[in-house]
Amino acid sequence: MEDNIYIIVAQTGTNVAKAIKFFTKKPYNHVSVAGDIELSKMYSFCRTYRYTPLPATFNEEIIGEGTLGLFNNIPCEIYQLHVSHEQKKHFEKLIRNFHICRNEYSYNILGLLAIYFNISWDRKSHFLCSQFVAHIFNEIGINLKKKPCLYTPEDFRHLSDAQLIYKGELNDWHNRKYLGYSDNSSYSMN
Image (cartoon, rainbow, N blue to C red):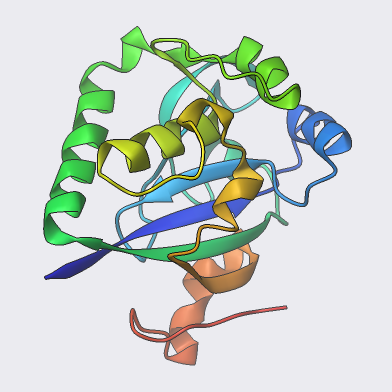
């Protein structure tokens, strides 16, 4: 039996996101993961409060709320990744564990420098958004080309098993229903 996990790479308009984009020169500098095609809840390591970059830790992201509610234009790409039923159950278990132990984790600020200089540095209980998603994938048995601590949002755009199903504005994602989008078709908006 096959299931899906969804990868969302995006670029918000926060000052931190703009600074990261300046240094990386990449179109997207944030990544989240979701268990359902509706993206009713996305999970990532990001700011806890809407207007301040710190504190930051494991958080649920909801389209149109929190930081994602601050911007009318959030360019994104959404990828669908086929996983086994067992992998999906393990994914859900890991997400529950991150929820339960949320206060034990924090954002890996020093990891930004390590990744920029391509230095492999695992910090227990500290994650960047991309390190978190790579950690989850590694734990559920998805083959990664490098260590999770070295993953960037850009790397998720090039996963061989991930299929691009949407490119456009994140807030428009829920407007796609009138176009007849289903889990078995793809929709791209340019």
